[in-house]
Image (cartoon, rainbow, N blue to C red; front, side, top):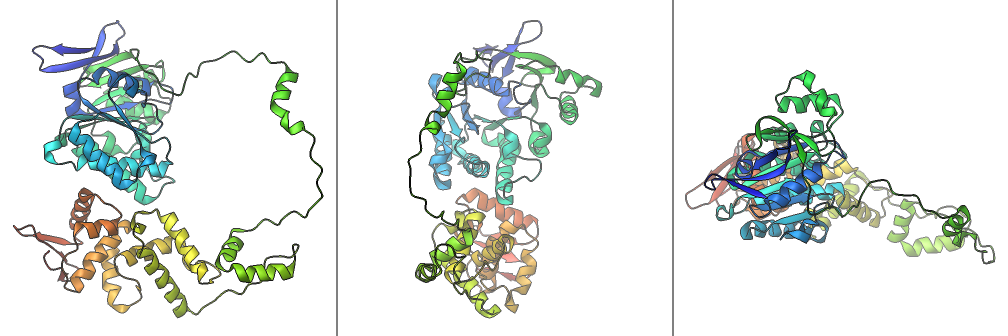
Length: 502
């Protein structure tokens, strides 16, 4: 239950008891100003701790939970939380929901369990960016809880695309580093401190450290708690549901906390031991293999169809009539059909590449699709021109597509060489919006607006476009000028050109 101290200036909640059985409190107002980091191995009780904190503070502050495993959806059973399944909405809709959450001060659980890791990162990033970019009138205090934070702010690159990692890490950094002034208080939980980006973890001033076994994690936890290295071994001996707490919202000295009970529970059920079934071996065999022991129906033997390779499937899609004619002549036991494929000269091949890129850019949502999806589309378009293979690998296609979005379909033209040298100074995902600006400057055209730059960058968030331009200006790639009327022009020092104001 909430405790109101003094004349109501501070509002605290009880999360558990210390070694002497005395209540351990968290000052919610202080927590909103100083943020929280929770760490503990799988099974140490992190989710239980977060659930206890959320239940106790539900009536005091707006709560926003990024839930990658669907653990916290049951909060809606006892409180007024809305559960939003991230897999049911696109990027624009998620951003709209995020903006409305801030406007109406709704407590919400963003359930991401139906998504793959990369999609989880992009969905969470779009939602967090919408919270961050809300109008100043909507900067109400909100507790933003992110479970499994190492997924959204990884310390090193993993198996996801660089775009997804950068986007997610940027959103988490904004939450922890700049969110306080916008009323957003981050409370993040991670299995391992070593997997969490240091600039994200470093912004927390309150810590609840649970059981962990690796030396590197124990050493970092001990440093954060102000303990000597030889005392770090005590972290390994913590029981499940017990944490060491420190911070202005918890205690000025490390305190041991046994987390109290919760009123709701996860949908995952218990992991406790259960009695084994009493079925006899013969009955168990009947249940497992009954259908497989049925007598097979006698059928006349037929030749087993030959498994098709992916390339052959694409050939048949591209030219079904010719393949069918050859297959009928060759018979069922023959090898792949001998359809002739184009092997054009370099100039004709470049024309096919440019044509495929133009067709893709003409589609409405191409800028917001994953690189792997776009590359598959590109490959199919090339095979429709009867090419025997993709003329570009994934890395080369990603670069060419970025150039094409920026208006450069043929980078071999001499007039683009200076521009390409300038764009090489920026990250690859920023090439398209920079080239869009560069083309406008070279052509002495008005500066592209935020919608055009967002389309090139693959975002519909005005805030991300602003941060993109700020980053390019910090790198010295552009110079932004804005007059009192709000008209903007962007110059490119390396080329000595500038767009017109717009």
